[in-house]
View 1: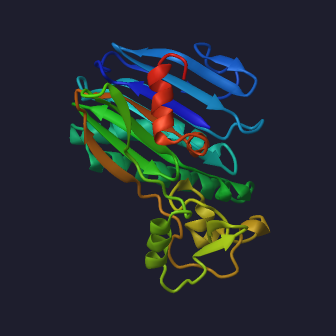
View 2 (view 1 turned 60 degrees about the horizontal axis):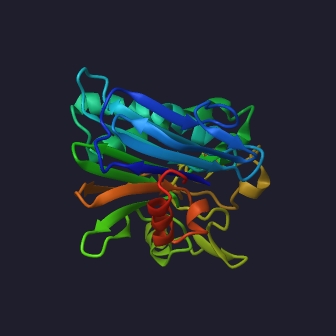
Length: 310
């Protein structure tokens, strides 16, 4: 489970600063307690953030990062803050690849377009997906299981008073907004999950694959795409995007009986724009490990009541 909280009530712009989590003992600014890694408060100019990682097993498959400063290679370029939560599955390779490349692609395209936009973010996701596909192609012969490794990808970009949220998979971004009349801070969800447990996701898959009655299968009371995976969008998971990687020597549990003509999973992110309002207090970016245990409002209450201890 990964979680990052951005407090953007005050300005977050300033010189480039970077924080992230890469496993045990990798960031001296954070603290490690067993399988829990956390950073109570980090500074981004006059803004703050906190991060926490609860490791599900001894092999950490997840990554996260926070970047602040110029969002392009130009000097000066657009200033802003970038947050990424990458919930890996099947291995650590995809989330690590995203952590190493997505932000760099974003800066490259922001430089070319001289701004941050939905199109720039979409291009950065596409370039990251294509880069990982190239990695799979190179390593397939000696390491075929890399075709079954993937990652959810949740990104927030704050620039010029606008928060862009881009999502693949079942992580979630939730805003805490102050209601001045009552003093309450209410939860506002900024992203949608791409998980087959939702009827609209199953309908989307069935519409995209009308000739495949087994595109979603109820298995052990859980809806899964092709009976294998719950999410419908990701980076990686090449075995469900390119048929040439869904064959031996890939492990038999990942191989489909029939070939497919077009990608089963998508790498196209859902992107929303939110104009930051004076009453917006903070935003929580977290993987499904958090949202399985807390409602949106419970998470917002936790941050609001313990802002330095998340």
